[in-house]
Amino acid sequence: MDTIVRIPAALRSLTAGADEVKAAGGSVGAVLEDLETRHPGLRDRLLDEKGVRRFINIYVGEEDIRFTGGLATELKAGDQISIVPAIAGG
Image (cartoon, rainbow, N blue to C red; front, side):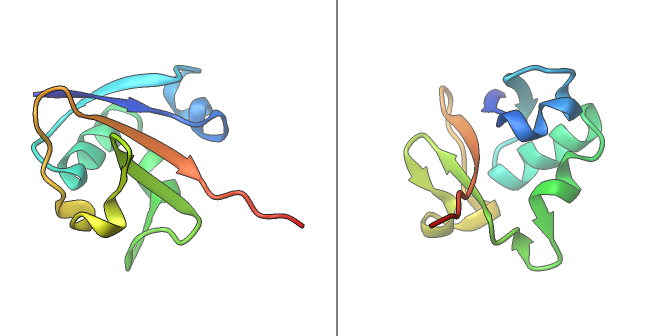
């Protein structure tokens, strides 16, 4: 099953400028692994040894995966993933 993944501007250099890409997988983690095969270097910008990097938010629909099972969050047909870098400032 292909899932649409929304890519933030800061990472579009890895997706040839595309703001949305397709990837396959039954969970968020599987989709990110598929994204890495299609767009090398993306995984390292999103994940570290503990999982999702601290300043990266990943949503399935409107739900933050940190509260729905993390990378093991299961996907169903029609789900969309959004990658959102955290914004800091004062």
